[in-house]
Length: 519
Image (cartoon, rainbow, N blue to C red):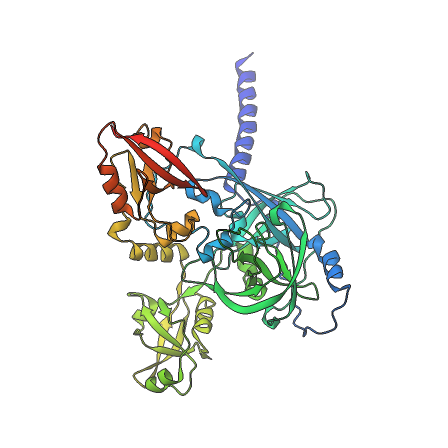
């Protein structure tokens, strides 16, 4: 082949390779495709009063009309140790975490990072509902968080029929995610209709449609049991939730809670359960749809921005005697329990014990109202804040900062970390740590389970060769029950080299008897 022909051949080959590499890079880094230019139409909420009779056809009609708006979601991901159960599906439910039976945030946990080829593939399932014909779907953040692959199945489709989707925006605070189909079905999509969650009252009928235990498009009926239950996926920033007795089980997460007109008033998010029953016992929770609807433009842009002024508020309402002692005209307001040093409130001169009665010209009814006002304020805005301090009323200007949830949670974790949380060496090639409430929630330990949790295992050590893994919980040493790290360490130190040591290990709901020897 001539030099000229050879040069031309390699030039063409290089061009083709460049295009191929560009496509790979775009897919790996999520660069926007042509469809990403689409805008989302924020659904209009029906604020008309709920009235009219309930008859034998009411719930049948809702199921028939709204099931096509509901989708089943399946995710896969390669994840590390404690992250395996953060996907909603199988026997796990993030919702249990709110009550001490599920996942939590690890506090000072030290683990050996596994190699890529050691990472198992985890599958998760959940539910969502279509809000735009261009393929936008709302679901829970914990359904899709960390997913490498998302597949969506539609109502009436075959078991093997599914469509790829990608995450557009996520919000940990409301546990909400907006995803979009990247493969579209031939038939047009049906959009869900939005109701007004602020209208819901205890006793109102509601319908849940979802994918519990992979039982596609299951319909359950119940009532609103209570309003404003403080729950959420971010510690210290709970959100007011709708409580319902409509059956919600693992797999229902992200599905719609509908009023008697078949309009979405909430996203099913949580259940109360216990160690004996890993399913619905009549207490479920849904995130109200109104605040999520307000977030849709930000979710569509890929980032949710909120305000913060660096305070913690007393959750209890201002009582009459407190109002009188502080010189307040009534019991409205929010008392500051903590002012974060160096934060906007601190810079403005606010102090613990101050009671904020107005924020940006609006009266503050209580602590929840103040939090809602602050997070809804655009960062960088200077707002007037009226406070009462020692019977004196004053107004200060506060420049609202941007809320950084990851940084905030990191500070709280560091503040909670104690020397006892540091790993303790055992002499068997494993480090152990205390069973904190966070660890107990994370590992779904039975109540009052003592012992020590294994944080790290050295390869080829006695513990490693005996099959002990990180996150195992040592509950007995030499058939003696142990309650804490000190007892575990003391019993293990008594072992002579070569002498067998018997451990009872709690792992994933089962106890395992392990024998190991000190070298």
